[in-house]
Length: 194
Image 1 (tube, rainbow, N blue to C red):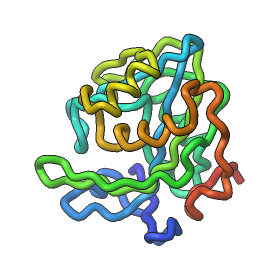
Image 2 (image 1 turned 60 degrees about the vertical axis):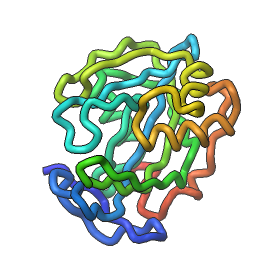
Image 3 (image 1 turned 60 degrees about the horizontal axis):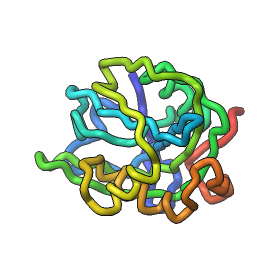
């Protein structure tokens, strides 16, 4: 059974719970990650969440989101999920927003409540989506996509909307975004294995 790491408001681990039961009307704060994967042309790989997902089914979002297992290093968790969901291998995995946090409520009242460090990466692969996780994929020009998100003219997940607003502050070219200091990650986040 897949587990997620529960957090206090300071980002310290306070326990674990089953992923299958963590999202509900009063979802506890937990650890997650988001990853934005770009190709050599600077295009962002967008994904449409599978229609069977408990949270935001069928919604378009950034490349990959997930939860590291207890004591799993963030880079390994991201690499694992990109492989499982999209069949991707990536290079230059870079921490860019170490303390991103959000809370969002779906129309049915189900809550997402995460401290969710954001990473960027690059790939030469074309996605091979796992349809249990991903309903669709599309490559999007970063400048056009981010402008549409900021203007509110594209439907996108609430976390992606908030993340894009912070990512554009890092610069126009994702390949030149500065790496954040891993020391700024929440205490519960593991950056290196072992």
